[in-house]
Length: 218
Image (cartoon, rainbow, N blue to C red; front, side, top):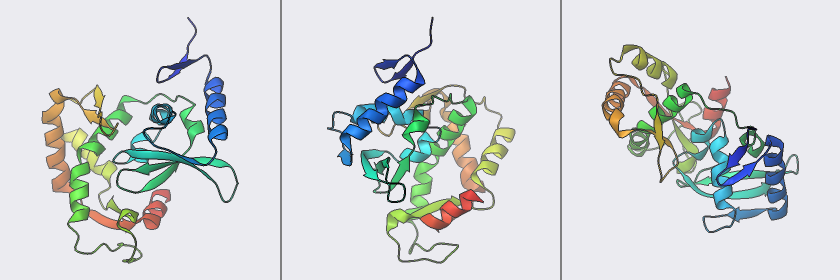
């Protein structure tokens, strides 16, 4: 039986067919907003799930998609407007490559989602948002990010996984509201232990969007 590739209910014989289909839609729509009432919202909502950095891209959830012209290369690019007002671009071509996610990647996504409320609480608790690197203090709220600083999120995660006595989850769910990867209900004890470990060991700081981007590239 030949392998097929699905985007929601749509089925394609090859990855190239998915790419051509998506390109034709984007070229046909041109610059526009694709909100939840738009005929192609469901398609792009299903497509973005294939992105290798899916959870990072959608943040706390998708408000709508939109297509804009890249000012440098003059091509059309896909954007996400998140529920918190922030926005980010994403490579729709990457979404057409159907790179399989590993269990480790799903576990990391669920662990990040589990601490998301604590991250939001930390940001909201700041009397004034100031970037710890460049000291910028007059940016829009959405352009300030919460960053794990010494230890990094990866170090905290790995130390917890090495020390936990609980069985590490192998299956996960998708939150119907945010589309984020989350733990199953039967793994609530593992999740609770992770939350406690993270809160005891994390050292959080505020960075502006540009400094956070530069830090990730180093």
